[in-house]
Image (cartoon, rainbow, N blue to C red):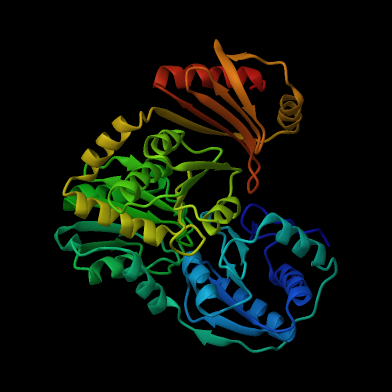
Length: 457
């Protein structure tokens, strides 16, 4: 049987090909064998998203884990990954497993692994799990698991960390995208007194709705915001660890923009100090924010497993350009539910519309033009990227001097006018991703043409 490989956060595969009971059992045995080397006994919490058969796969995994002698707790209903992260901590578990393919299309499914700290499994852990995954088919076991509902404990944690006392005047639209986050953010805001409309707030299987909170997938949310006069529209992905936002005018906010707004608020309104962590693909406006306010800035490879380590070590905020925000004063995992609630807190306490908040923040930290393009990965393109990694003599790109070259994840060129370019292969999809940040659209377009020539497109 084929070897199973983990990506930046777990193993994912097509449900019509490789994600099946046989391979779920193999992966679970790999996880259990790894845990047995560290712990003789202990509790493992298991959750699942709302995809077809996710609950069944979670039960299969739970029985297998119990067969290895672990106490297993499985959620009663589809549960977001960030809720599972907190559940690991609250139940003193040695690990957590979430059956989910997160934001990937419905044809995919997957398994995320959480450490005893509630963080995504780091690469050294997933490599050991991979080594323990049997190559042969394994038999099902008939172990048992105790059901539990982590929802109320999660809500109690949010209430301690957020101030929603002024959201009573707010009107919000929440799009749960039929994901595991259905009924979470909407209920939390309703209980705080906000007027909330929830879209796709059930677990219905909808193969036509891609559960990734990107602008193209959220036009129904945008229209609902405009038609109801809401102050914000918030979407969560399939396991509610990502967020997408529209303001009152129907403008879409990326992870870069949300990260900058949140960072500014945490520093100015909440008086937080410490490091801010961002991935290598995330806006450098955060660097300028950190410099202005005397905070440290940490740059990591792409993936929450790298950012989580910084959260554990004291970073107040972690930002991914793809819409993931993590908080060092919360569980060390991306949390789209907390992010959405915090955005409502920011708007309510600022007494300004989101569009005005963004205008001020963008101006203060010189947010320019950001461009991200995906290219289908081909063998020649991968070979060209390997050549670029080994090339040390290039001094300019699109007439701009290269002042620094980084290779922590792909190839990144820092240029003398403050712009930058990153070219990297995706860890989860057969794509090469191109990222560009520049002062304006013309500069970004010039750099994009230069990159295309550089990699032979």
